[in-house]
Image (cartoon, rainbow, N blue to C red; front, side, top):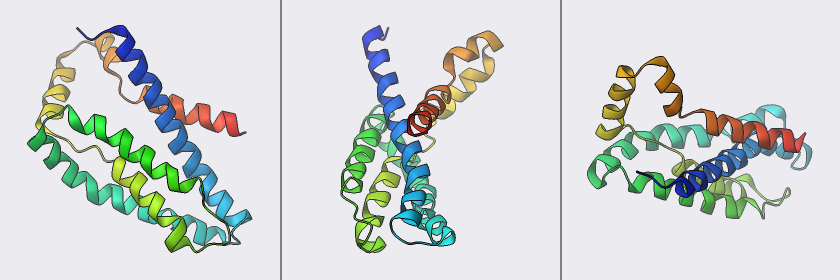
Length: 156
């Protein structure tokens, strides 16, 4: 059985990670428009590499988690994502996008993919056999959604 303190710590880590990600995805285009002089279209396209990297890396994330097991990818992903936020703290509005903003976005995007391993498929099949009351215990999207909403409420 998992200790309750570990569960609370992981929940808080997830809240902070998705809160930071939600804040970045809302504030980066705004910051590029206001401080960097980008048009709204350019600011929207600035986030396109983020989606492309996540889409491309998700395919490899599933293979990796099948090869090394289901325990390490959820441990490594937040660390890589956190490392990606470090260069984003020193972004200068007058600097070039390619050398200043893009590297941090790519590293954050590399930490986000969650490939579907055999373990995940087994867990999903297990969820299908649970009753509606028990499925609420396994809800995986509540914590990330709450983290993003808290970050956006904090900014507003």
